[in-house]
Image: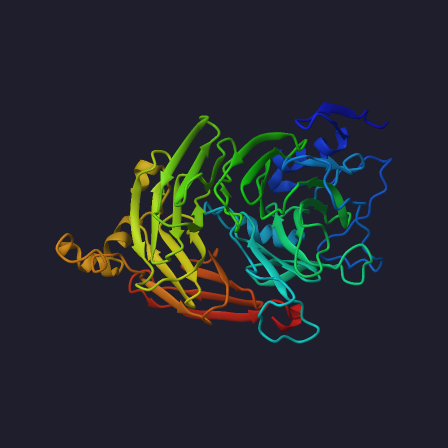
Amino acid sequence: TLAPPIFLQSVHSHPIFFSHRLSFSLYAVTRNSSAICRRSPPYLMTSTLSASSAWPESPFVPPPMSENSPDSDDRSSLSDLSDISAAVTDAVDDDERRSQTSVASPTNTAATSVQNVNPSPNSISLPVDSSTPNVLYLSFNQDYGCFAAGTDRGFRIYNCDPLREIFRRDFTGNSNGGGGIGVVQMLFRCNILALVGGGPEPQYPLNKVMIWDDHQSRCIGELSFRSEVKSVRLRRDRIVVVLAQKIFVYNFSDLKLLHQIETVANPKGLCEVSQVSGSMVLVCPGLQKGQVRVEHYASKRTKFIMAHDSRIVCFALTNDGRLLATSSSKGTLVRIYNTLDGSLVQEVRRGADRAEIYSLAFSPTAQWLAVSSDKGTVHVFNLKVDSAALGVDRPRGAAESNATSPSAGSHLSFIRGVLPKYFSSEWSVAQFRLQEGLQHIVAFGHQKNTVVILGMDGSFYRCQYDAATGGEMTLLEHHSFLKSEENF
């Protein structure tokens, strides 16, 4: 029998309508993400589409949407939730799932992403073949085992190791929208994604977050706002929506608004959340230039950190939320903070001249930090963090590696305080050269001492660094992930 609908009074003074089926659908994610299953009630006729299934030939039909939100402010309105089925499945096949279970679950940062800084019709981009879409957005999933690409035609999901396309959705030719996806966020490896329109011809309004169920190949819900959505972050139990000067935190099971945060102007949608269950940590810009706000939800504490004198442009958070890496608009220094007390743990130097930092990423053990910028070089830094004090589980031998790994700062430690700060800075131990000016995001691979690099031109790099000697990294593989899978 059909579950009776529930009516809740929202913060917007109008009722929110949804079904028990929404709560049931996402309960499978929060309670059993490692073995997600699909259980559809008999009265729901749903299509089944796995990673190995053929793409549907019928055109995609999204739910009806209004361009203007009825709300008088930036709070959300919910719609199209009454027909959500219990359809949460794993987005990878059984062989892929078995291969991933043999790898220890990483504990690095929340999903890293980069958005095309100017995805307009007049944007400057590399010449591409007419059959190749333009990339508007790139993001890793929460364990860095997959990544998502939003394009001017739709979105694509890839496995990182080995590199292969899992599935794609192209919306071009659809009368309901232009196909452009400006934000796409995965929820680990399940079939639920968060989408926002983007590009010159967006598929959805820029002020809406669409909850996409790829098993049904359609949107099953939406969050509407009065201003443009800059980014989205997902946890198993939370949805975080970032606007230009506000952040909204929702409960995933019923989309109830839990928290609202005001920030300084945040055009890049900076926000990160920890992924350890039961102890959510959220970091975002504060109310002042150079300030970071840290929300510890388990202990109900808020910490403000004056991280830089200038505007913050990038940060990263470890998966347990204990370490935070930040960089300002100068792009010369990266600082690592303890989020519990706000203390500065370490400071490393990318270079002497100004640069725009595109991406920061911690390694699973928080022993290494990767940085990409518009200078075209990916740097890997050795972090000398007191893992015992922070509770970070490092492998045996990590302390010795810290003591022996090369760092320019270590050779000059005896003259700190005598020479200017520039000469006593800690420099990167490993580097990899890329095309200057092109946006890249980085993450540490599941293979030992490897870094995965994604470019907005569709490039995929896997390189390896020597933890003992450092220097130039070795290129292991290079592909264009926009090409067909046979060409990988």
